[in-house]
Image: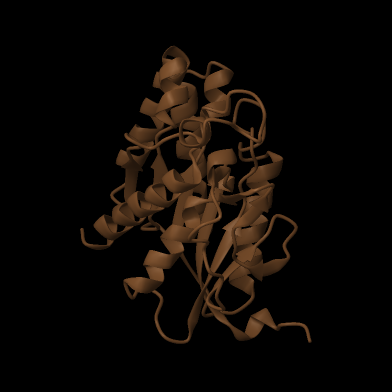
Length: 254
């Protein structure tokens, strides 16, 4: 029997950006995330499925949003009778410079459609957080500080304005330090822009990623091919989710 999602009341989390948001963290199969009936994904094709990690070869592939969701429930933010709906709007290798996240670009427009669709399922549905991780692609395209700042600021402000959520928490994070340090000249302007966009909102926070390992550092190899220093490992994605949630709680308590 098909599930009628219009009968549920959802807290909605926007998960957007590129691959480190999409979830490329690899790790051993111990301590897997246990799916439950309170946390759901809206996928990029607008289907809705129970949130889960992926099996990729002999590894589990994960994303920081699952740890964020677990803590959101554990700390009592998901009240009785409500569920979480995570909008999986992220796509690896995408940015503003290659025309995916600007206001007239495909992934931005799809994200807006996903938000509208999720909100329209039930009048009690509400946006509770905008989690973003992106910028590596723009760094590769040598984006300047001003370019990235204006592009990201425009994206965040448009979501807040379109859906009348001026205080929607917006949280973004730094890159994997191994890759950033190998490419420090192109990364610094973009990371500084992201940090400053976060700081421009009272409900914005920037998450530091010091101490978080890449897939190569954690596993000593990568099933993605090449020297995968750009993606946080599965263990690191869990810590990243904890840091994003700590930032969320800081916003709530301010």
